[in-house]
Length: 304
Image (cartoon, rainbow, N blue to C red; front, side, top):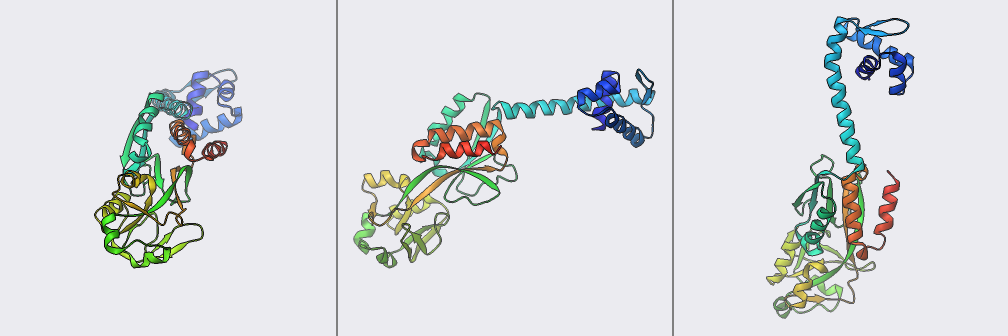
């Protein structure tokens, strides 16, 4: 603040004009200049009742601090632009299976709509490092994992129990949730706890752990396709396998649970134009699958 005050006094030619421009009192500007002079140990301005003039030390100081002040002003202009117009690099993390919920089609449409944004998309099933700034936004299938992050529900997907016909011919088809205890159960570790599947609001079953537990839904799907056991997965991931007869749906009358798809981002990031544009665009694109998404977006916007 002291350098800003000093540079503005020199530019304006008086303490009163500088104070009006900066929005401070004349006394506050004078105190800032006095503190700056005390910190450098030299007088920087000659004052009289009408004008101020630079001392030799003041001319040297002004030559340097004017550049610093201009750089600060430029940073402020850039940051203001980031808040007002979507632009710059946007770093997004998404699950490897994101192509199955049309992200590969939605992203190009977003970039055509916002030509000043450069998007970096990283595909990973791991939790994204959002708080340290590696990513601006992350997709997440499942419950939000950090209360320090804002989250936006995009859609909820039905869950489904599946196994291959060959596995079922060998081990038999379960006729009740209790029968799952007799089967090899393949676990996806961030969708459910090991040894437990929540099939509906009223039915949670303890099941035997099969030959594989993984944090990848793709890996669980592949294991079931290779006849290794029963998997509990989002239906969108295996809908083509079901239609082609590679996997069979089990206990459809019992399983009613859904799994949510969220957008997550650090608190405060929604105020950045590029993040807000992305969140609002995705919410609109996926609105049919999440009827409350638009209202959630409006509520989030009102918080900033």
